[in-house]
Every structure is written in C-alpha cells, then in structure tokens.
Image 1 (tube, rainbow, N blue to C red):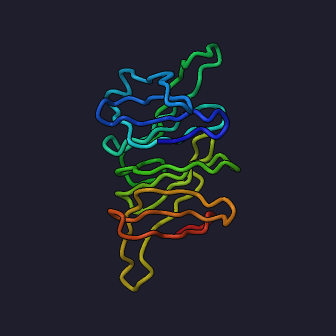
Image 2: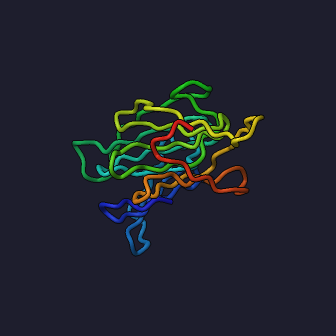
Length: 176
C-alpha cells in the first residue's frame, strides 16, 4: 500500500488478483489497473511519483514496471515500461521486495532481496548505485532486504532484513 503525497490517493497491490487498486482517502474505489501485463506480473510492491507514475515491483517475476500517466487522458490511462530483468547485474533483480521513493530526489530504492542489496534507481530509470548488504563480520554474512523506508530528516534508510529478524539503518548515500 502507498499513499500519494500530492493527491492523497491510496494505491494498493492485490497480489492474489494481480491488480492495482486506487482509492480516495475515504476508501472509495476510483480505478483498477488490470491489464494483460499486470495479470502475468503479480504486483507485490508499489511507489508513486509526484506526477502519478507508478513503479511496481514483482517479487515473483524479478522485475519492475513503470506505469506513466498518458498525457492525452485524465482518466487513468497509462503507458507501460518494463524496468529490468532477472539477474545479478545493475538493472537486474532477484526477488525484488520492498520499494521506497525519495521525495527530494525522486530516486527509487529497490530491495533486491535475492542479490542481498538495494538498488538506487534515478527518475529516468538509470541505476545510480548499488548498496550491498552484509553483516560487518570477517565472513561477510549477506543480509536479505525485504522492506525499505526513508527517514528524510536523518538522511538514512531503514531496512527490514530477512523475515523481519532485524532492522538495518543505512546512510542514504552509502555503498553498503
């Protein structure tokens, strides 16, 4: 679930039905994004940009999609863009879990769970950097990020690790 900071609309991923639902602040359903791509995609995480673009992650399909509002329509018409594929390089994902958007920069932080890292994606879709997550020991034990949030005032990420075993505090500009 995500609340759009500009419009106060509520965006919800329904994994079981493979749809995105958009509600007003009173809980009234305004629109459902349900197309052939979404049905195969199985959305599991969502962030919403200032312009209403949705970046949606799929844990099961190892990629992200962006749904950008169509300029020609005001009634929930979107253009689709696939962001990334399965793998371990930049712009590739293995079990992408949580997403967070930095309201100041527009950067999207993607919990790339299977690769033990957070990818930082700029608004134009380019991977700015990768934050590797390892327990600071001699053995470099990998940490699986599953949810991420941004503490704007402290300029840090708050990341839930594993199956909720720990919380990791990471400087927002860190490499790991």
